[in-house]
Image 1 (cartoon, one colour):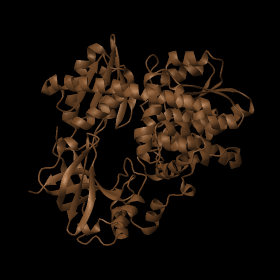
Image 2 (image 1 turned 90 degrees about the vertical axis):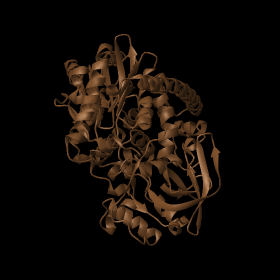
Image 3 (image 1 turned 135 degrees about the vertical axis):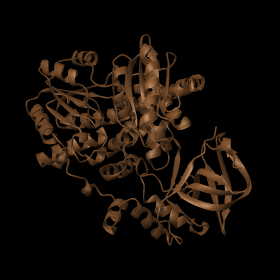
Image 4 (image 1 turned 180 degrees about the vertical axis):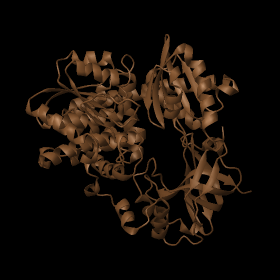
Length: 555
C-alpha cells in the first residue's frame, strides 16, 4: 500500500549550497542555532554544559530525604515501571544507593495482573517482602493520588521521579520531581531525571568520588533513546556520551546482551531503539521485567550470559505474537465502518497479548498514519496503548474523552489506558469525533520536510562525515533530509533481504549508491527520479550512501 506524501522544502534554500561545512552551518541556522558559539556547543556537546540539577522542583527536598534514609539506615523500596526507561532508571538508582550503603530493594510490577504504575495490589505485594519507610517511584506516580495517599497512611514517605504529563491534582508525595511542574528540562526521560538526582546528591555532598556517574551514562542513554524523548539540550549531551560509554561498557549485562544481539559496530540510537531496547522490553511484555533489570545489575558473567539468552528468546516470541496481532488488527480495521476509522483507529481483541499492543499500535500508526489505540481484552475490560501522529496529542484526546475510561496516562505521542469492554464502541466513535473536530485535516497527510535541495556535486564523502556530526539523531533532531533532482538510475534495481532495495544513481557527473529500507514493494517506475532522503556514511561499507525516504518519478 502506497500513500502520497507531501514534500515541503524549508525556506531559505541556497542556490549554491557551498562547502560541506557551509551546508551544515546553514542547517544549524535553520534549526535555531543563530550564532557560532551555539553551533559549536551543539556539535561538541560536553558534560560540563549540563544544566544544574538543583533547578528541578523538589530536587533538593528529595536529596535531603534520601540522605536522611541513608544516615538512619531506613529500608528503601524502589518501585519502577517495566519499560526500558523504568528498568534503566531503577538499575542506575539501585547501583547508586547500594554504593552508598543503602538498605534498598527494587520492585517492578507485573504488567498483566498489576498494570502500569503504582497500584494498591502491586504495593501490597511489594511491601510483603518487608517493611519500608521510604518509597522511590520511578517513571510512574504522577497520577497516583490514591495510591500515594494510601502509602502515607502506612507511614511511608514517597519520592516520585517521573516525566509524564500532569493531571489537575498532584499526588501528596514528600517530594515530586517532574519537569512538567516547571519551565526547565521538560524533555528529560526518567533515566535523565535519575541521573540528575544522583548528580544533585553528589553536588550537595560535595564529593563526586562517592559514585562514578560517568560510568553509568550507558544506562541513561538506554532509557532516553528508548522512551523517544527529544534528543536536544541535556538529552543530546547525555545520549552522545552515553552511547560512547555503551561502546566500551564495563557492565557485563550489557556486554552479554550486545553479544547475543550481534552488535558489532559503534552503538547508535538505532542500536538502542531496534536491537537492545526491544530485547530488554521483551521481559516486561511477556514475562517479568525483573529479568531485564537483573541483567543491568548483575556482576556474575555466567548469570549475565543466561539472562541475555533468555531475553533474546523472549524477543523472538514477542515478534511472533506481534505479527499475529498486527495482521488481525489490520483485518478488523478494514472491516470497520468509515465513521469508526476516518480520523482515529481503535482496535480491540481478546486474542492479543497485552505485552505487544504498544508495538502493534506503533506499526498501525505508521501504516495508516492516524492516531491509533490498540486494546487487549480480558473478560469484561481491556488495557491498551495509544500512539499519535505529529501535530496532535493522544493525551489531549484521552483527557477530553476520559468519561469512557477507567484510567489513562502518558504524553502527547504515546499513552496507556484501561477501559470496560462495553464502552469501546462509544469510545471509538468519540475519539474519531474529537480528532475530526479538533485537528486540522492537513495533519493527516504525511509530510516529508526537506531541509535542503542539493545538486549532485554536493554528494561528497566530506558532506556525509560532516552530517554525521549532528548525531545522535532522534526526535526533534532528525538526520537532515536532502532532495536531489534529476537522478538517473544506472543498471538494475536490486532487491535484498526481501524488503529492501538498492541501486546506483547519477546526478550530473556524480555517481552514488542509494538504498531504500522497507521499500522493495514499491520499486520506482522509470529511470529518472527525484530523491528525498539522508546522505550518510554506510555502517557496513564505510562509504557514503543516499538512504531513501521517498522518491518521485520525473518521467
